[in-house]
Figure: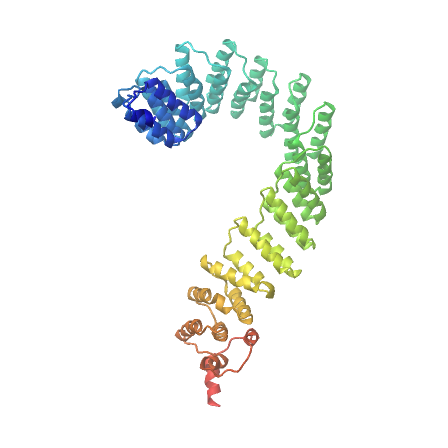
Length: 573
């Protein structure tokens, strides 16, 4: 294209349009498309409606719908009139951004311009108007198709029926269904199901049944809709009667039985459910995932964990699955009854099936494992659960950490914390306080200092008890220099630090060779009206002997008292 421009060759309009079309079909991107379009303009080729349609489509496909609308408004200045393809591109783009009202405005603008839509316009725009419940416009399109001598296909008829039913326009939906049949199209089962659902929404169950019988419907889907509504309305006995009647006529499938069985389970009627399952199996229908799940959930709600566990093993033998809800309920009841090993068995099996626990159930399982001494198992369970998208709460992480500390596995705590960070676990003040207390051991005291600094940098302040424990341990291991700045921020923020803590920090920092930092704490201490105790005073004036810094934490474990009075009394002797 640049070569043609520089050589002053005149490209034909059809060649330019073919180039733009090819770039769009290849998905070359907006930048390359716009480069080609600008070269066309520079070459003096005047665009026609096809050229501008490719431009508008390129802008829409790149998400720049507003720019496409601007180009649409400028078409008249370029002596071009939009055609139905122009409107189709823009209406589809607006609907893709949930701007259906603007799409409708554009549709009426098309009608004002007396622009005749083609068959592809009807096929693609009518479903969009139905999706966004633009019923008036969908019906208008149907009328226009009729006037143009175009016939709706099965898909468009079905879409229109569903739209009318969803908007409670039942009579109109039935009328469209009749037109569908009259035109020679056999309605799909979904169209009958939509009309039955609309009847049932208004509790017109008998009319729904009459509608199915009058139309000689033989597919099971609409009958299942009616069964589901009867069950949800508390008419379980009626649902059983209809199930038996329709079964004799060959109008039901496995889902029909499963619907009724599931609702009896949800009502806690396990005896009736078992009877129906027996008849179901005799009738050569197999329970599905929903049925097994409902039965296990029912057993769990009734506290019959042995029966629930037995059903689980039956399901496992048949290679069936469970819903996440019933799977979680089974794990929970086994944890409640201290059947931790069985709960782990259930979890491990369904994890391989891709089924995930709820966060609550996972917490119970891991806590139960820790409390029963299965610490390593708990750590493995957490890792396995993450693979299925289930994450622990901090409370559960804390339980694992405390269990690891009990086993003297401090490095395991660090590994677990690293995994929390990798999983983008959001730490709050409570979590930071708990973690900090867990880190205050000899083996990971250095990491505790790093964690404390991270905590303060993220604008969290430890509670007084945790902060005092931290200061004691940092002084004991001569690491106050690592946390001095963060400690100063904490004191400035909380203002609840005792004289004992000031003394420990000042004494420890001087012993660690950080006199400038120690002076900052001393200034604060004096501003509060406190003075250092004798031991701190001695180190400040350089009279202290060669005590080891490790003794500091032990010296300051005594309770606070009136340090000012004690120093004055010592000075009188």
